[in-house]
Image 1 (tube, rainbow, N blue to C red):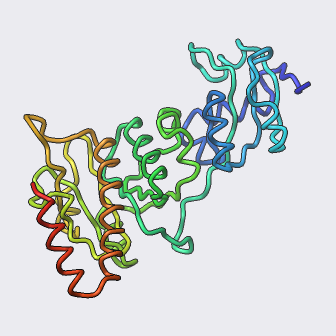
Image 2 (image 1 turned 90 degrees about the vertical axis):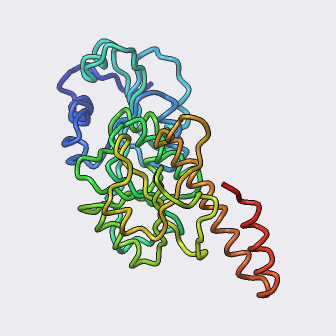
Length: 286
């Protein structure tokens, strides 16, 4: 049987209280996972869990997996856990997961990245990270000091994907764009005012970085000026733009396919490449 926590001064509960704040998470290098689904997804992601706590007598879908992963499991009374988490909603399972340090220059980039330019909403942030990782884009570039990818709302929306991503931080979007271009990335920014439909982005076939902007103002003017391509997602009817989380999914999927197409075309003889490129441009209408 798991050990039972009986004191509010227990070190495990002290840790849980500290992780309710961003400062506490940064100091501890860890985040709080609430609910068996999110904990299970963290285990699937290979995340390192320091310990898990369940309400005594709660339904038990995780004990076996935690034991195999050698994660300590403790029991606690429901009223005590609610008090520690400062929540009125029922929470029967929590775990503490290690956070990877922000990826530095020594950590190699993949062939795609998503750059967050002023995205603020936690739900959108989590959706973007989940979508990016799901499409094989593990490099998430943050450009604002107050972007917190470890809050409960972000973690819930990301469904554990934050623990798989390589989080990179720069002082400003412009600095991030410069750094990405120096590493061989083509920078693509989406804007409702872009003149070129996204499906016709003239990619070279190299690494691609997608810039996604603030929910209200979009991508900043300085980033649009520094991007290699400014494109738009064609819209029908009176809707001018999409939610940034939805738009990110569409853009990453389409740019990934365009990049693969360019690589395939590059392998063809020149005459075939020219003929096929012309045909593809003809079918990609506005």
